[in-house]
Image (tube, rainbow, N blue to C red):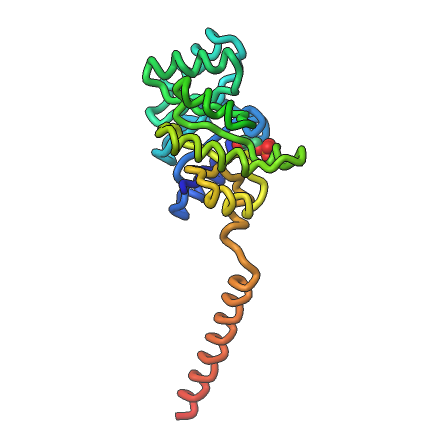
Length: 223
Ligand code: G3P
């Protein structure tokens, strides 16, 4: 399963890229609002850091507006994917951008039917929001699993991005449920690195090494 970072924070993206685990990036207006500045500049910078897909989300809710924004984003870099929310207009914009060879990520997916429609319209990525479903007492992983089965059964090429990931267990569950990609906040990526026994083990190794070195130095000094 591929791992994307769900952030507009360029420094976080640089760190994940240095770790060698970054396959792409997703942004949205809420994530952009946390960092501010020029959205175009951020997206351009991110596309220099990763050659993987970088999702840039349109704001317009009319088809022509979505097309104008989507075409503009597509000029920024070859790895741009235009992110469009599920709606009747969104489906039309996805279909028309697909005809123009522009890749799209259909976001705010909450049911397998919405995911199926997005893929049929031509979205190359579809993004079920697992955390927001969990928030309202519905199991978000069911959408990932069912959509995965539908895509496999009917040989649909679109890839499923497990989005709205809130904790490391969501990542494991998404991988097991058949998501092609999980897009994760940087904090979750850091949580995935750590385990208390790993961190404790590192401290103990250093302590034992230091004690052994001191003992060896003392022995050499006596010789
Ligand atoms: O990828 C979608 C994500 O940014 C939404 O996450 O935590 O606001 O539901 P959340």
